[in-house]
Image (cartoon, chains in turn purple, brown):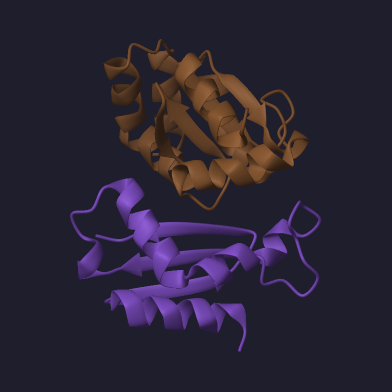
Length: 85
Length: 119
């Protein structure tokens, strides 16, 4: 299973989002630090989840990091998260 | 001194600190570059710590804040956020408020220019 699917699965399970997109943006970073051949290094997540409502900016990012899991977070180079209300 | 002590010393003895890859004059990562660019443009007086020069600090800062990525911005010893959060706060005006509340001077017109350009 690729990392997009793993991230997706972990987020679905932990946060039960109403909306979720997981995008591999690695190609945009080709040649930059952290780029790995074959991609799967830079990800962008768009998420809406009731469980994240009312949390501070830091808290909701932390909730996403935690849901993805420490191992996977360590493997990937970069993650940006966009929260939808 | 341990890396944790060193980090604590750095963030408490400087009002604004950015832990980043590269330096504010020459960032070496797009995400670090974005945050340094905002601070530079807003004329904020801040200290930059290049984590690429010290592996202990590079790992230690992630433990210090329990935050997995770099850059990391600290104001008056408090962790404010990474690239996504600083970008959001810049555009919403929360960053201005946070600087004002902490007595950190910055160029308000420059902040408005960033918002106008991204509106």
